[in-house]
Image 1 (tube, rainbow, N blue to C red):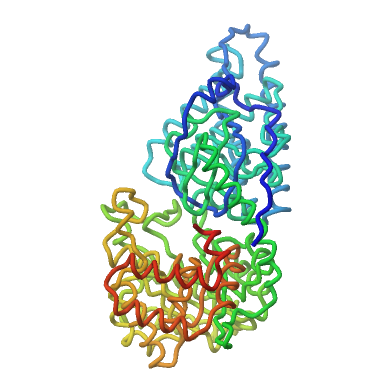
Image 2: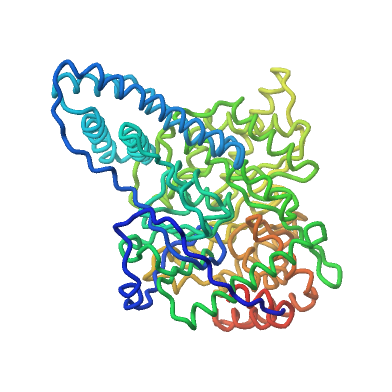
Length: 614
């Protein structure tokens, strides 16, 4: 495919943090620096940096007379009103672009502004200490933040960040400053920060901010969720990149690999620049496949469904040509709320999602809390190894009343919609049978209440634990489909933490044990005449797609932006090539050799895709 000449991105005209500005000579004198973080939103971006400083305004302490207190209170109340209006405006903007669920993030910010205890403490302290209200606001907020930051509860620690963000707004409004600094960026750039608050990312213009990078963050952080919804490349968890990069530096961001290269060499810059241009060209061409079937040259059809975390991502399903939802994660209902969503709240969400995807199927995964996902409204005690602890289906089965609310909502949503249910973290047939018994109880209750519900509901088991893969034959009689979660299956089978850089090289999707487990599950499913899907990262890796097809996988479920690329790979393959690749892989003990063979086939059939991911 012909390469377009690369044009260097124009400088950002406004530097947000003057602290991180350096003279051009100093910048040039420093060498290339490569940093590895966590890629949370794929894509390649090249541009100049704006360091987004979140340091609060320096506030001097100024004594006031008692007669000045009413004026200070009036200033404080005016700043609160202005802050409330700004947050409401941001919330409205986010809802219009990303949907209601993203906008709900700002409910917590509005609660801070309207918190009677916070406001009363500021006014009381103002009377007691008689210093300027900016200073009082900051000191009162700092006490709240300090107390919350020490708590073990993840949700409450996040509230500390909310208070910090809102206080920053109040203080800047007291000072009369314009604070939507993301809106001040006028030309394309890459934004770097220690962390991004929800209101920071809400102020981003995707045509201006080409990528963002942060010291803090995880795949489930607000930053990651926003990045994926905006389809902006992002890397988080870089620890100290905000201290190693300066405004005006050129930076490369590879959101798929989690790599950020600061002050890249001209050779590397040229390589990635071409890669970025190629990616744009190829992705534009791939969009023409949106309405075409994902079938091989010789007519073997492999449906591609979408994995989504939030209803705000629904538009990307139709935009990229996915067929329904193969994995709808429901944790967001519990993670970002200050109360447990009841049956009616859950029902409304499930109905909206299913209605959007009609007539295609929506697979709703039951709650998968625990591991790296915790909620203040669902109490799960801290554990030494939470990924192997009381999580997902284990937690739900131990709390049947809680579990039944979700099951009832799913059954009701499926009354006249194409909905399926899937249990996560299954380790054996016993858990499926127990979950099905609770599901039947819900059916009987709804029937007695005269409430419409799904009489026939497809039930699936997520296979992500080795014991489930090895006993798939025993599980199959109790479900209608399997879905292999390869991310956790690889992690548990190989005893490798996939985000631990010391053992990351051992995380091998093409390890012989993984391939044999996938084949075992597929064969068990086929013996019992039920399909097997793969919903992990393997399914979104273009070079591994032929291998999965050859192993007998019936369906793929991936993030919507990955659909066009995977569809293109499938449409350029012969099914016989896939089976030959898989049979050879099962006879080979070397993971690296198997991966090399996969890439050879990709180079033969879809060379432009191989170049794109290399």
